[in-house]
Image (cartoon, rainbow, N blue to C red):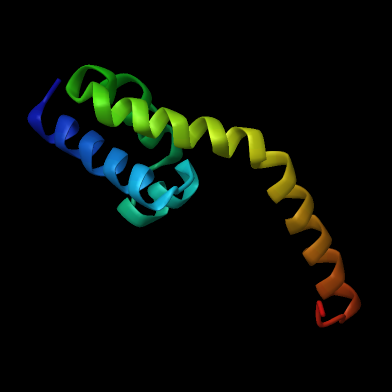
Length: 88
């Protein structure tokens, strides 16, 4: 593993762990693809920094458990906006 990819994995992991960010948010913030983020924080980070990997894994697991809720809220807001409601 190259030094650049290891460092990127640590930066992505730190961002996700500290911000409670999703893979999509991390990808946007660091201008990389979602697949790159996923590989970096699930494979490369495991060997580069196990403690950080464990913290990131906890955030990713929580995001996965809540994913269906966020999707439902987003859909609800989408249709509310289409009807012209203000959301209050």
